[in-house]
Image 1: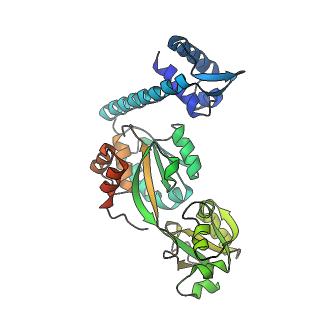
Image 2: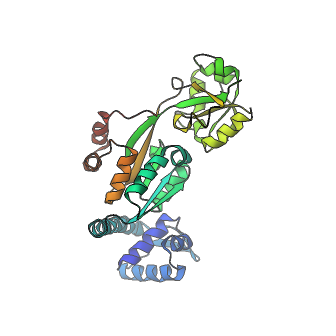
Image 3: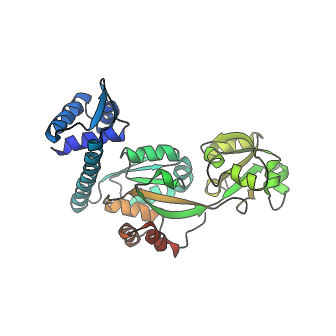
Length: 324
């Protein structure tokens, strides 16, 4: 067996058992993948996938074991490649990052600028999406780093490093009654149609859960995936906006009133993550530290050495994360 055979088999498993998608992701042809897979199965003496016609329906029990070891072997090879690259051309390479619109639009610009100043020859690719879409990109090995908030259960194979915390704030036109309401309450918000993120209405810390604690139901008007859209509809007078504190720009949003809601909703933690077992390039370490200055190389390496989630939590418990 060879590297490409293992790579193709793992790619098929990570792309929904689709040879077409695996070929597209790897930049090769479907026939090449099919031939390599058949050769690998002949050498192993059993099938990795159950075939139904010309398509694969599921992974065989033997295939699951092989794919597990193959994924580990490929990760080790990638780590060796990273070592070689760092030793020979430390300032060149590619860094692909999956993140949300809020991070890409409001938080990462100064980080990216500083990174580009330091590494002008490194290609930096930002892929935006929801937490679910980011998880898909991670599973398909399309990115080296992921940046998101919460949704830890979607990323069981990632090392998640906390970067900063943020709260929710309410935005309304300056003529709106809530702009002069004083300390905001959930009952105040329940009187108006709301405009917020899609994810704000699902999960244990969702708006529905927060309102339910007060025996109330939020009036959902519009949901959107980014703060710019929410602001647009707030400006049209279609509802009260609830957005991340990091998405408020004092100069650009001077026409809106920002009402503190940090006491009403849980504090959220944004993290940066990467696949366990991956050897990071030097410039990836630097990007992470530019994003979260407390995430030094020593802290990152110590987190990788932690033997349990409890040990990881202990490592970060003493670090006071900034609130933005």
